[in-house]
Image (cartoon, rainbow, N blue to C red; front, side):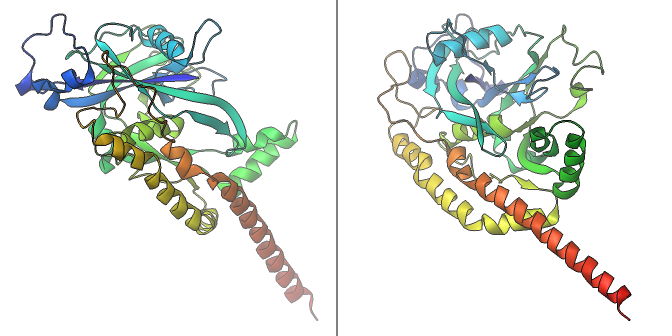
Length: 364
């Protein structure tokens, strides 16, 4: 699966470019030397997926992307095609610079046990001072949003997304047993909490031909009035991108997934304490450290990649490791153990309490 991370710079009203007609630049260094770019506000493009029944990511905030088809020569061609199909943005135009790619990520489910796909994120930069026009595919995209990058790293916009894990875990059971298992999981585990970022778009475009914003009976169920929350897989890709920026603090506010149930949360925290510390140190030595070294000769670049004459990425550079993958290495393995330990502990305490009560009321 190929994702795109389209970016642009919003000019400051007091530093607008002299002309925007046929505005083109040849490479990244030339682009970042522009006065309006230096004083502008870099932004990232997100989409809100259309509400569709049976879609794992229905109504989620995402990056433009999709699966690679048979006619696609490679993942890069798939990224270009999908972006044109979903939002009508031509990445091969003269106003778009191909900045390279982020680390590939293996997408898993069931707490990291079942691999689903390999995600290949690419980064593109729109050099025009005006936002490009969009033509949204209403079946797949409900809306598109340009979001300032500074809001993505601001603690003021961080929140949590709660998810009911009982649906996923109960799929191993079928028939009349499934609702019972689902109820038991929900009652014992509560919900899972994931780090999320509330998006504050500067420009939004909505699909007039989709049902998300015109009817409350679609698969998303009034998804139009929900806040735009960036979390999960897409937040992981964005975190990898932010780690490549000159500030390099994309993972500074990272929080590990946990549970709303207080005892499960406590056991998970205790059992993963040392692992989280090791993974954090490994992430600082890994992709962040490599990005810091590359930063010495690419300080004018928004995305830390090598550059040839046309501004495309230089593939000779070593591929950094996904920061989020390093942070989550082995985490869900410990989470599964912590959940079972907590549930067994509850059973032991409940049995001991019942035994004590029975002994008290049955003794002579």
